[in-house]
Amino acid sequence: MTDQQLDDWVSRLADETIADAQAKGTKVVCASGISPSGPIHLGNLREVMTPHLVADEIRRRGIEVEHIISWDDFDRFRKVPSIPGVDSSWEQHIGKPLTDVPPPHGSTATSWAEHFRDQLERSLTELGITYRGISQTGQYLSGAYTEQIIFAMSQRAEIDKVLDQYRTLGPQKAKKPAKLSEEEAAAAAEAEEGSGAAAEDDGRGATGYYPYKPYCTECGTDFTTVTAYDDATTSLTYTCRCGHTETVNLREFRRGKLVWKVDWPMRWSYEKVTFEPSGVDHQSPGSSYVVGKELAPMFGWERPLGPMYAFVGIKGMAKMSSSRGGVPTPSDALQIMEPQLLRWLYARRKPAQSFSVAFDAEVERMYDEWDSLARKVAAGKGQAGDVAAYTRASSSAAGSLRETPRPVSYRTLASIVDITTGDADQTLRIVSALDTDPVESLDQLRPRLTCVEHWVATQMSDDERTVVRSAADVERLGALTDQERDALRMLLDGKDAQLPRLEDAWSLDGLTHQVYGVPKVQRGLAADQIVKGDKELGAAQRQFFKLLYNLLVDKDTGPRLPTLLLAVGAERVRTLLGG
Image 1 (cartoon, helix red, strand yellow):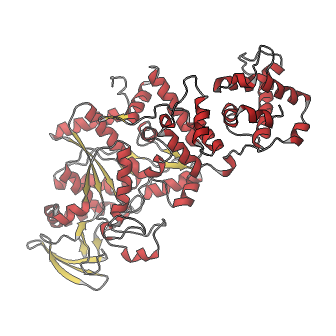
Image 2 (cartoon, one colour):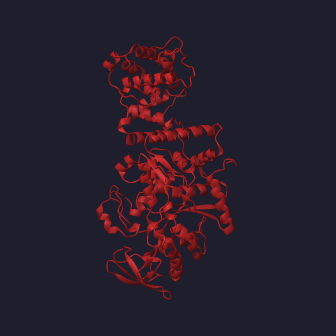
Image 3 (cartoon, helix red, strand yellow):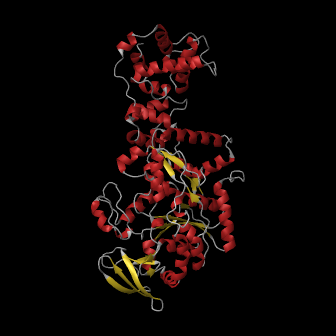
């Protein structure tokens, strides 16, 4: 990249992170934390994508950097989500580590945590994200944090003093962007909730303050209370809701973890983290990121650079929620859009800016923007920030992501797939007529065509679907006005040198000229004349288009007319238009 292309938020955060690491005399470590407590949605993806983009920029500069993802799979199972394959029987597992909870029915995973972690990991591979995954279950059970746990217990009085400064604040709600739609508000609420770790208790109880929470060795849950601890021997006694009481030695006991507000700064120190963003649930007054600034130095580290990221809304969420439950996941998004587009949605917005991912017809507009940007970049006309975002979306330091060889407009492909009901031969016939350089195989249109096919099959609403008439509307044709009859005759048979016969205009550009040209010729204008601001002409074109839609698909609107005509075929168009 050129210096000009680097003038974007990713580069600025990379600069700050590199400088911070150099001041500490350590390599750059960018971190993400994901709790596989349920479907890991597109809001959670920002937790991964933000440090990935920063780490990737640093790697492009030839500087040593590592992106780690901490899988918080030793967190407690908090509640039973409403998702397929899960019923009320999972309530018996509330309070257990996520790795001890069985997966949803039908899953091949060995645990709840593995099931949802695997889903995200497959998506991260598609998105070109490289990282080192760390299982917190593995860390705690291996004893990796034993010394840190014992240290935290020895400093419990000091930790309690820090936490006590914030306890009187009560729950703090971060401000949400104004003017959210109902769907965006629902997505924001679920994204803000996160794993729930931010809302967990901080270790204060009736028996005193202890920053460590054991999992009961009898029932497996964390409905436990520490009743005594001896600093000299590291002997800890706890009781459980199930009635079990036990005394263990913390140097040997592995079934427990530090409370979240202590666990997070401890891990910053352990992994030498220099950059880690977090959501609004972790950055409000008194929350874990704020408190971590004071607790991290106890473990010999400083709180890393950590911008707050805003929520990710969903357009078309209602249909998604009704079919699968909850906010859509990266896997859901990658079924209807290529990885480059999904990366671009995160790369082009600063972390603090909210944005929406479209699952409804708005996905076509997103693709129009993306394709327009690609053309500008190829022509060397893109703005610096846009070029940088495009470059980060279409490639990583490891290389370019897989591209569609012939990226036909998503909007056009959706119309074709809809009209042909996915018939491969018909699809190839129509697409080949779009360009003077015909497409030879549908493989040239993939993976974009695959995404379009899935979107049409699962997301296109019934009222958006196009059904071509099986026979001409004799009654409507018999009621045509003289002007309408003349317009159809010009469309089908041409008009002097102004308009050719329909069959002779049989290409996307030719049919575009034909359908827009008919109303112009009727008003005494040249078919190819550029006319701006003529409201009467605009009204005449809309009325002509409506007539064509009525006669072809029995609707007032539909796919772009040139595409529709190509799909229907010249012979059938003549039949339906009475010619």
